[in-house]
Image (cartoon, rainbow, N blue to C red; front, side):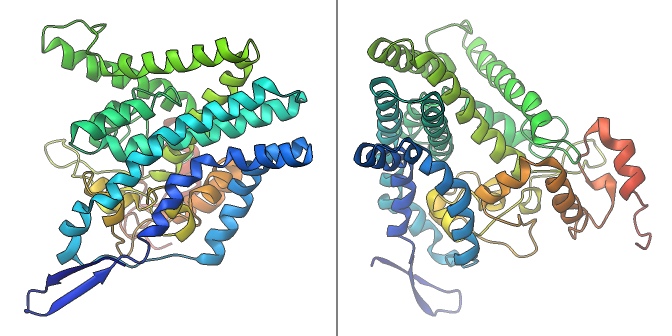
Length: 397
């Protein structure tokens, strides 16, 4: 297995091997999961197999995270540059792009050509949507990079979940405003995921459009110019989905509606759990402090990180947005989710359970220490939260 050599400040030579090097291919193969259910349905005739990826995603995956546990190991600082520049890891992100298209087209083909019951049809649409939500994660990894090919691939892959505005909004909006009340993609203490979705989904699009409109206007171009990067990706989405409609008929209308909504829901779920209640403070001049690792909820759970290009090491990602997935690091004393993302999503989808677990975890963070002035609170719930948890800084619990 390939290794990386470096010299420590004291002159000692080190040799580092990424033992997960080939396991990262799971992030490439994971979007093909609808074909497991399709194959079993074809072999047995049992339509319930089409729902298998949902069971794998939200029952098996959290169990695997629990069984395999967490990995807090970091690559040595001295090899980070070599590790980051290794083309193997970059190629994996290229290879997965066409597989997102294959996955959607394959699921649509099966739904459009087989005699399925209504629940199996909608279930397969849901599986396709959940899987296409992974395309946003791929676009996330690619869109943060500076090379033209990676940014073009980000626009291409974001056409699958019809979320072409994401990389603009995320890079130039979310990363600027993260963990502040101004960010529609940062959830607030006391805000349920369902309320958050009504703020995040339209808010993110509006912010992306405003950012792109401003960029084009600085070049004396209309927001509707062909150089609008949102419209470029959305045009590919239109071609893809109209093509599926023409190929497989009217049944694609409900299929694609379910697909699109659940693809977006995957990003909403991720955004919700990643910054819940965390707040960047303002300095004396009214400017927000620089984003630090403790402004994101982190997870080191092995399996879900391996199928999500290390997305769950979110704290280091926000501190170093250009760093590639294989180089992301763990830090001590970080806000830590109780599970990998798949388990955290399940918790978030049941707001009373989420609040019961996460509100206490949020207030117990060392940098918060039960001080509500250090928490991003949902305005409509502020009075109730202060009444339940509020105490002055330094006051004993």
